[in-house]
Length: 82
Image (cartoon, rainbow, N blue to C red; front, side):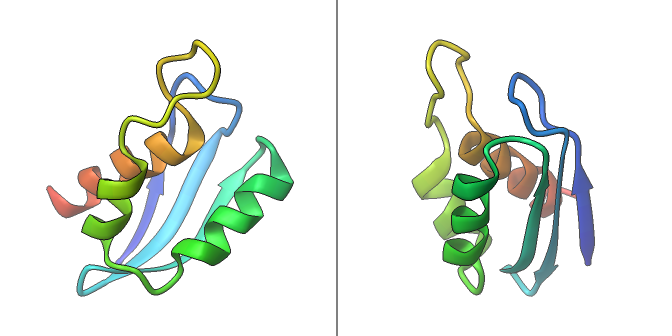
């Protein structure tokens, strides 16, 4: 299943990824800190959604109360609960 998620509170405008039997593939962020986000996309490829949620949920960027990794965790939770 291909998922498109609109994050909030961060510079990224959209997160897209594929979810196959709880395995995350082909994550892409639109906008944001491109170097860091490209690295995150490569690092999470092939991991289970729950592993990523467990590691990324609650990470904050400055005083925003969220971050791109936290928003990815929220996107994965959204996809798992559909």
